[in-house]
Image (cartoon, rainbow, N blue to C red; front, side, top):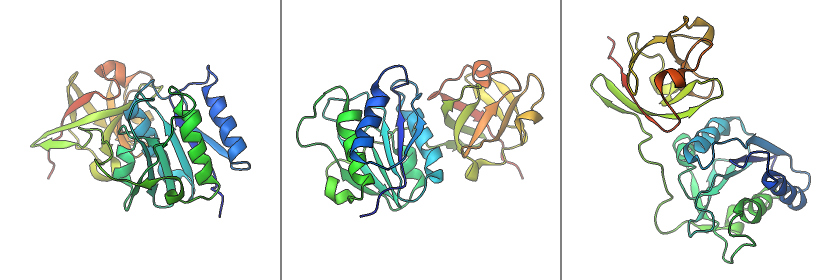
Amino acid sequence: MHQAPLIALLTDFGLVDPYVGQMRSVLMSAAPGVPLLDVSHDVAPQDVLQAGFFLAATLPWLPPGAVVCAVVDPGVGTDRRVLLVQAGSHFLLAPDNGLLTLAFESETGCRFFDATPRHAPRSATFHGRDVFAPLAARLAMGEEARDVAAVWSGPDPVRLEGLAPVREGATLRCRALSVDRFGNVVLGLPVARFDPPPAKAAVVAPVAAPLAPVRTYNDIAPGAVGILAGSQGYLELAMAGASAAARLELRGGDPVILDWPMET
């Protein structure tokens, strides 16, 4: 059995409470010597979509064989299932609540497993420590998916609805996947499909604004809203020295309507 190169952690636990430390302690005891990577613990509380974006954006940068333990779990303690996905050489562990939706779309040949525990865990309110961490440790120490989970059966894994962009003539509808700490709005428009944007693109709703296609943040004129290919694989809305999210009254998860003229 070969150890994983690392275990990547993604949660909404923050760093004030002892939750992350307890998860890391379980992992360090059960998977000694396996490095731990903290992708983020500052996902907005219970924001499954933001967590899914963080994961999908990070997945291409993880080394082969990495184990991902993603816990943003509003349904903890309920009958929601524990989802294990073998995506290429990566193992992804998460609640079956749609968190892996964007990861499904970016990976091909995914294999799905049900890792729901057969017996009630120690706590009904902290499955990150008592369910997900022990499972991640077993995978990181070389156990196969079939050794820790059953092949998925029954209803398909939960997917978040309404994430796929929809075009109706010159109108393009999408979602704001996340707003970063600078106020940049990450749109659900993959760079591979939607870059470069049309020269006369504009936001129609929630707040109308013309968009200036640019290559860098520094290219955005004062007061203008720029649209550019972001580093995370999606188009972004940004302003120079100001918050595009505040200007456009956008939060993560909000629908966005764009004027997206077809160019000849």
